[in-house]
Length: 225
Length: 271
View 1 (cartoon, helix red, strand yellow):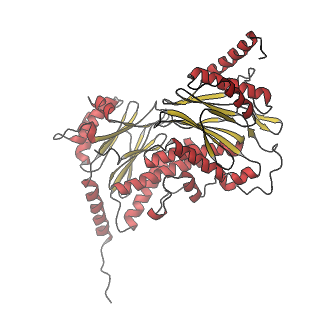
View 2 (cartoon, each protein chain N blue to C red; view 1 turned 120 degrees about the horizontal axis):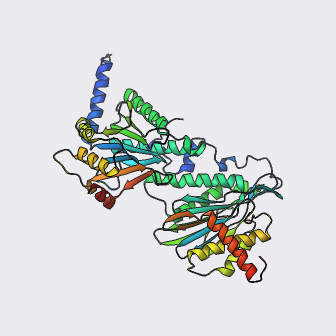
């Protein structure tokens, strides 16, 4: 009888983390930032139908990078969770924090117990109210959750993008400034990204009950100037 | 609550009603058959009464009175019976108020859920069919006296026109070319619209006619509430056009009622 050979748990985790990081770094990145009237999410995504950003609930948006089928499954389960909760309790009882925790638990569970970790990084964004600031929950492939109230960067080369964005970020800046800086940070010094290369959506006051809105081609080009 | 995840072979897709059945969240249809025997007498539960819809040049107008009754008693004076189903459609209800309002809530969630999961809006025909299924599932309760009869209307973005659908308790749905009304005062409302209706009416004329229809229904039917000038409660009127669902402001409804009565007095008719 052969003995199953021993692999140190540190090694297992390290291999899995490397695997997931590689998968995520292959894809394009995404930036979310707060601005004076809400939250803007900008993804480097030329597709018009395979979305990286989408609506979860009245004031909550979802964004994901990495493997499309994996984060799309998470997106749909988030919509199901939010709609079920809103139906069983009330619309105001649906909040991003509990959803972000569920995502974190699930990603953590898969990372430690399954053969293959999910190759995704996701963002749950919630528009603020008079009582609390907007929140950006950033959840990594292994279930680490961080909350930001300024900006979040997901995907590959996050450090370089975050650094570029940090230099320009200003509290209470306008949508135009926020979008231009976010697009500049995503593109880097060697590329230019135009409206057709991007998927942009905002969560903003003034859109009625459902605060989520996509900025479509013409509108986006006007804002980017 | 946990994250609702399903295997790919077992996925409920964009169907919200199917999802909550799976998650064992109680829905109005699930309680069907639970009531022992026949519900005796309509004085035990609330009834909503008259709602009407008519097409005009830019879309549809939908209107509903505000009264809910329990038998011969007035149970509620400011009930809402006209709801936005989503951005481009409206649903109005008549019948047992409790299950009807629940059905509307489920329907609204269902449409939004589909839109978010699929990333596209359901066609108007698709929405009408969805509502039909909900009414059909409710049939056992309808047989026990708790009938819900909705009226569905919306703006069809692909055809560029307003459309109206009526239902019966079996879930059968029928498209109306011009107008319809349902509920206990529906007959009077329908007749009033019939007398004043013209194809391609302007928005103001259509709103006016819907108000007149509810006024006549309230005049003839004890279960339909008329304009309540003392409390300042007026029927709900809404339009659905290319701009979406828009409630007619209460002030406008109040003014139109006042004008209607003035005009009739001036013409020497009974107000």
